[in-house]
Length: 237
Image 1: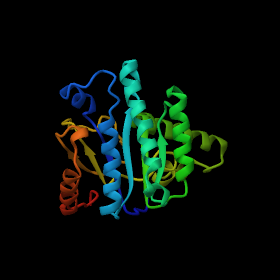
Image 2: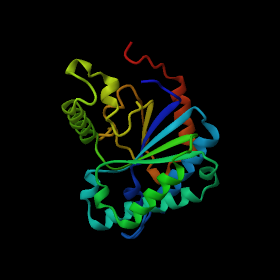
Image 3: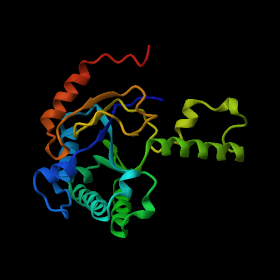
């Protein structure tokens, strides 16, 4: 698969712990978390032209099993983030193209579904930076779903004539986010991927920060990028 610019993945972990630490009420909707996402995207656009795709894991499939209050808080955060992004002049200057992926769209509020549809339609022709937002996403589910959809195409004989025609490039066409990741940043102190883009993470450089997501700064992002640039990437060779 051709690599055009850098693709970075972000697991913005630690917002709930930040809320408890800062004595936020249970109804807290995570405004600081949304602001951090927006600020980070603006910083990337301004300072890192080599980054052309950003994938953010907003909610996992397991997150949808959380309490109603907590799930509502995160979904409200995503809707608020979209509202702020759509008001940014950088978006209207054809800078950011928004895309959503996952498996739980039938469980989101109608207002968020409308905001998603609006943001995707409004930014569909934008080219500078692609923003993928994972909503109800799980890495194992993505791989299984891709295999099932590929099998359907084989059965229909609309893609390839036999199993020998299956290649990585063919399979990757059925992934929710086809491009491989170059680096992954996880905040919040946990040092694991927890199922984040298992296929795409094959040769990604991993960075784990102890900082809770609402406190994650552009300065720390810059430090990570500096270290990333100094790493030797051999892709197993």
